[in-house]
Image 1 (cartoon, each protein chain N blue to C red):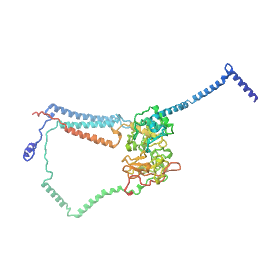
Image 2: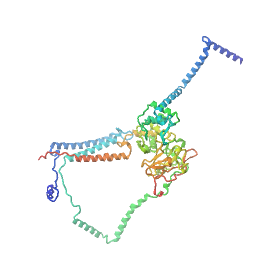
Image 3: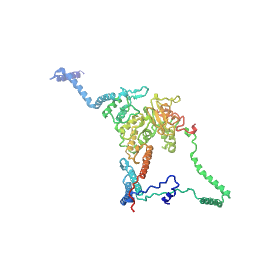
Image 4: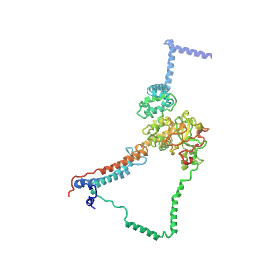
Length: 292
Length: 345
């Protein structure tokens, strides 16, 4: 015991003696301390760089999103996204706490938000914000409360769907979606001037987000009940439907028998009657007399 | 009968003089030989074109592919589009050709015909009566009442042929319209895949198209318990929609206060007007719209009719959760689902 103590004391004395040789003794200790701290910090940074960067970036993004929100959204949704009620109990702009990043990505990404003017329904238009700004807004709204996240490409990408997926997606679509969106996804009318938009030309991601978040009057189809696989199959069906050529000729909007009947009776029959009248009304006559 | 003769005969009796027909004006093809030849060529060319289009129809039948990888022209199925277009053009060319032929080359003189009395001559009428009387006399229908009456009987009996198949309209439905397959403890599952539903898995504003679990159950041999026509019949009555809304928004009537689970309510999917399936639910207004005739029901207010031709509220199915936490019905619907019928009063 005594031996070890003696040895270690001697060793410590020796090291400090070495360090001291050729240096100013009073700076040595702080320098060693500083070096140690730097090495530790650098090592941690090297081991977990992503986390550190994301956290720093996240805070930046949320702050940037909040700045955009205060300018573009707060007048209807409230300065803290708490929503603004109208005098008679309606909603001027609903609360966005807990709607999640997916809802923001859908509403702003399809141009529905910010609305051009208050009305019965927010219409699809070219997006006002670019991708980075939408991401910042989504990050800010997601930071307010837990809600559905923006889906990953693996969830909605239906490019590798096979026939089985398409058939099953069709069953889901006809059961859950056609009541409003029409059998061909061409959209349809709702009460009081609202309408269900057509689904052709909508990106796979936006279709997924719409099912997930239930924008405006659309009901929610949560991932627990309609699983990501079910949703991907619905998307596969819609995309297949969109890619299928129109075997029956011009679709006239795929709106059903009313447009087709109207076209056949007005343009078809009307055209025939017009042609018959025109044939009978036009006749060339000559002033010359028959010879002989 | 010539036009001229008739004209002069009536001349004195008419208060306003009959101006007669206007003077005949010849067509260019009548007076110009070149025009006539040209018209002839035109007509022949149209008929020839029609033949070409018919051949193109035949070619496109073999050239364009149908099936899994169809040929496409401008977003249309190439085969159907080409077949239709060429057949249409072939018929159109024949049509235009015939019209050109008739209007430019066929005879072009005005014709007048006078109306004749419509009835038969007295002689013909008497003749017919005589033949009928002769038939009655020779067949002896008046003298042989046995034959006559048995013939009438046979003819009358033939009427049964038309009446008997009306039995197919029956039998009367009895109390089938008053009940559905729902019963106490039967799980409510998602349509298409039969997933049972936990109230906690539903978001506010969620809509699920539901069916009774028995449609997805199998017996010991793996055969479905209900299938075929029976399944369709039961489905037509038992289909439901399950919606979740803010519990504060629900204005349940006194007897329905415990019919929901944490804001989850279940209603019949069959419209009470003429029975269309309705799942067109607006999550913010809680209104359910029938796309057929715009009947609108307020699901937050016991399914009350707020617009449209429906006369009755959409029936509600009382819900509870079972031991495993899944939604179940606590009983069958309390009233018949679907459109009104006589026996219901």
